[in-house]
Length: 275
Ligand code: AMP
Ligand code: MN
Ligand code: MN
Ligand code: MN
Image (cartoon, rainbow, N blue to C red; front, side, top):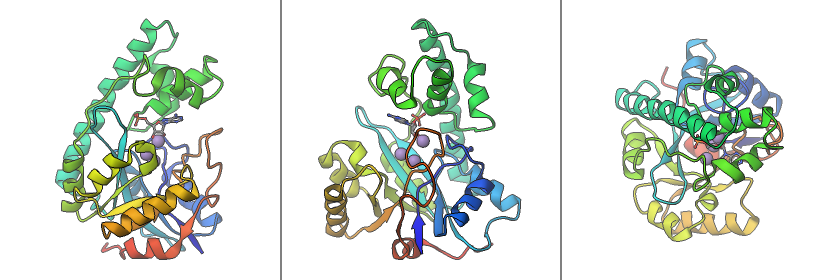
């Protein structure tokens, strides 16, 4: 049996709703999963409120993926076992999500100035009922309009940090994210360290109260994984991994179960739900 501790639903920028994601994970034979939407715990709330969390036949870890503020690099921090109804956490998430809405409007304006024929409605049609509006939704709208062949091309050309339509949103500092996760009962884990593109910065972050490292990740080479496992061991941190499944056509991994980790890593994190 195998596990996957990094995946997204429609509540952020994934394609499947939480219920569909859990069914797909069961069909893929996964034993433990973590739902880690960007800046929202709505997916887990929806499952809980529908009586689907805890779930039969699969162990679900409530999770989240935060984006942290940094001048030049993109830093993501996962939180596992957070209390989804913790008031400090949900208040701060509301601030971040509100910032995403402002930034979404600003990015659409910027794109219009760059003479792309795109409206807020075009993006909202893609985003559906997601509250955590993302560049990923904007990219899909631009691809649908025929401006770019793929979402990746769109990011490379206009949406990446430093590209013409990039606008930052309100981002919490790494220290605050780590504290928020811990005070709501969770475990902060540094997501996909290779994507930070600066191992000196990775090591600095690991010394700031992070408790785990996502060493297993589809974009990590075997050498990258080995290096991050060694780093985790050096600082006495947990080792985690996940596919970062979004379910968006053209984006890897195509299906759940394509990239998995050994159950032992997930078992170390999993707690029986108290509810
Ligand atoms: P945001 O959180 O709004 O800044 O958007 C970032 C999201 O866009 C990430 O979570 C990814 O899902 C997606 N993304 C970022 N970079 C790329 C890329 N180069 N190609 C495709 N998707 C990307
Ligand atoms: Mn995403
Ligand atoms: Mn990420
Ligand atoms: Mn992710």
